[in-house]
Amino acid sequence: MPILKFTRNLERFYPGLSPVESSKTSLQEIINEANDIYPGIKDYILDEQSRLRKHIHIFIGNQMIHDRNHLPDNLNPDDEVYIMQALSGG
Amino acid sequence: MDTQFSKAELERYSRHLIIPEFNIEGQRKLKESKVLVVGSGGLGSPLLLYLTAAGVGTIGIVDFDTVDESNLQRQVLFTVDDIGKSKSKTAAQKLKRLNPHVEFHVYDTQLTSENALEIIRDYDVIADGTDNFPTRYLVNDACVILGKPNVYASIFRFEGQVSVFNHLLPDGSRGPNYRDLFPEPPPPGLVPSCAEGGVLGVLPGIIGSLQANEVIKIVTCIGEPLTGRLFLFDAFSFETRTVNITKDPDTKEITKLIDYAEFCGLNNLSQKTEENMVKEITVQELASLKENGSDYQLIDVREPYERQIASIEGELVPLAQIMSFVDNIARDKKVIIYCRSGSRSAQAVLQLEKQNGFDNLYNLKGGILAWANEIDPTVAKY
Image 1 (cartoon, one colour):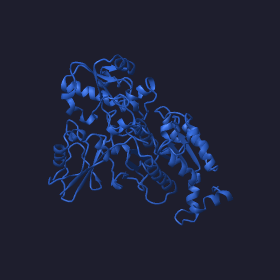
Image 2: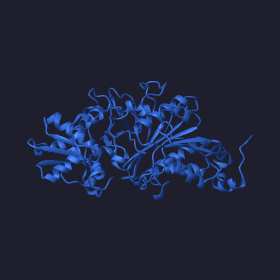
Image 3: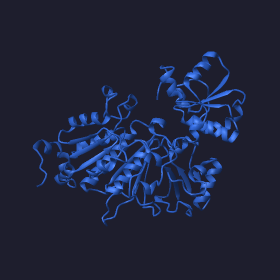
């Protein structure tokens, strides 16, 4: 089953945030499933038009997703999806 | 004429010279190179130490900040004696003692859209160790305009990121840049700085050293630079991952520098946001309420671990949980909400006013930091 993992710093907003293992087969579906477990996390990741927010990126395996606006990606059972965001600290 | 080395230099760099892939050619390239380090704090400290020790010929240091006591937990270039002094000047003085063969150029000024191109133009490689989004986008854009590689790193709490942006590829094109990864910054306040959210002291040592490694590889043309890839490190779990990044065809061409404070939503004018329009109460007014025994509710929206560092009492309800605390918030008396600096508490007031119609909420202006500065110096500042 695909697994969705998050950058640790999102725990600040979603205490107890853990990887989400899912039977879903698309990126959009797995984000929706994560939102059921962590209400509001979808709004943090996607904007009002369901586009990826511009300070966030998603990787499937080691590959960056290419369509930030539509998130059309399908997932294979062994895919690991990783959601991360920009950090400013130096 | 080939760059020559003195006997002292040959002895100093001997451990480089005997690496077959590096040898005296690598050392010569280092000596001939000019590297600009933007920010001499957490990342900048190890970065500068290793670039200096390695023998980069000319190092520029940009930093307008002064050394603060809270820097010493991670900014290993500085000591107690340096508190209050210019970071860039102090760094150069110390580094000169580490390696007198290196030439330092100090820019004790803020990098801005007005001076960035002029400063960056003279250097071969730029290393971004800044601590804020406006400067990160400024460094990126200036590097793209001038065709310079940008060795990037950033940190927060336990996590670090490293990449090489805008690097010249064998086909003559440039690799992805910061905007291909993050086209725009987060809204102000959403992603905190290390000053606001904290950072593990050793983390910039790890990440800044990786950044120095990439600078040295680029300058000496050895190994495989981290171009088109992003290295992610989580010190908490010791998980690492290296992901591939590519150019985003939707990214607009960068042709000129802009107002980066405005771009990041931080301009004075644009700061007149809703967050700034919430009702406020000063620390002096709160002190009077306390002294007079007035009836009010005080809510602390920081995290429990922050409460252990410093407290002015009140009910502890971290910002992420404030909406589930609504039923416990009074509507018939003054409710004062505070955090460390007043930013999170302003967000709490806004959310509660918008979603629950409160009209009796006040944000403590300047938060617990203002309380420590103006009312009670025994309260720790963090």
